[in-house]
Length: 389
Image 1 (tube, rainbow, N blue to C red):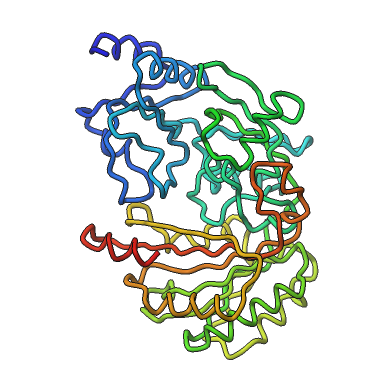
Image 2: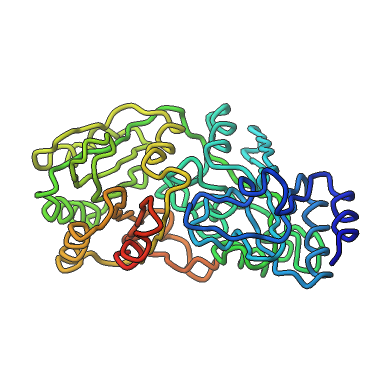
């Protein structure tokens, strides 16, 4: 590959090619996780499907490793290649809502906050992430846990079709009726089967306001609170209620360690069905109240800032016994960074009613997703924070 090849490639794009000597190279190659510091040889900033197809063909012709950046909320760092071609989908931001058909089509650079803003204009929504800056593409292709999952399943369960650029540079539409094997793999198999340039989602009625927020308990009560959380969720809760428990330092910046429950209820019996949670123990603060759906989905944003150094691990659990709770609490007290956190996302309802073989996402049971989110600021602290997670 020489300069003339790159020049011809760039001239054919609606977008642009960014090279290491461009002034905004560092900004374009960066992702949410500040620990990721890879340097692509070229970055193709795409504006449409044709750009993506040309970029794939160019990378193949020149035997380049190709990485794909969607929304850029990337923890693992696979969105950025070292020395290869990074195909950047961030400029592809269109969201088109058809309220009559209850469908939305969106491009892969869209974040869930942007998607929700458009769908909520019509009092519609589908399951998305719990952090507004999360990309629609990565979350959907990997699964898609969110506040509506009890009623409507994962984000991938709401996917109707996907426009895909294949490894050969061809463009196909994957759905139940067209390329069904590819459609199966896209739903939970990650971004390894092609580059999705348009997602089509089924939408559902969702009023802008609901009841949600957080209840904060003293950290000394963490074991009792997690046992209550387990007993309450395992006894069966309605699809309209989605809960997450956590251990972290209070997000108000006070430095106080807390055990908390995050809650969202999108049904008509919210007050009654949240009452047992609110009656438990002696909380430091009950911050549950009326909240907009868009604000709910941004509730965790401030605690997970772009540029922080991150290393995350997670594990799906069908049960939560006392020994697991002890490990979680002890793990919190051993946490080297006060910006890290531990979360237990409760899974139930529509998620577990899907056949485990229906999509590439096989975790179809009532249970929990345990997340250890290590987050810190200094490179010298990498090793101990990674070891902790």
